[in-house]
Length: 138
Image 1 (spheres, one colour):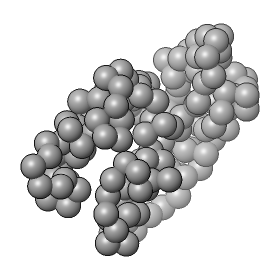
Image 2 (cartoon, rainbow, N blue to C red):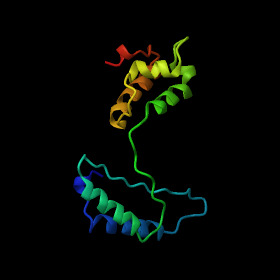
Image 3 (cartoon, rainbow, N blue to C red):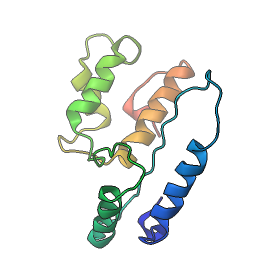
């Protein structure tokens, strides 16, 4: 949810009620395991909302494991992604880091919102059998 819709008094209660009702249902032995993920997206400067969410996590009644907040994506992580798919995405003679630099030239952390559309386009080009080059992403 976006931070604008966070309500420190209501949101934790709604989540706890949802989990309680869901877990109160009898499921067959063959039912798969379930994971509940809930996240809050903040704009810069929303420290009060972050503190409220953190307090709700610390004071939660139903247990569960709190995951670390998502951080900007380091260029090495993008290089690792290209390395993982090197047999599909790398032209001959190009290293995963060189390929990353063609699409993400800066050596600074990136916001996932900036990376995801590019990677999705790369996947789309590959799935269509088209050449994967930075100038093909437009």
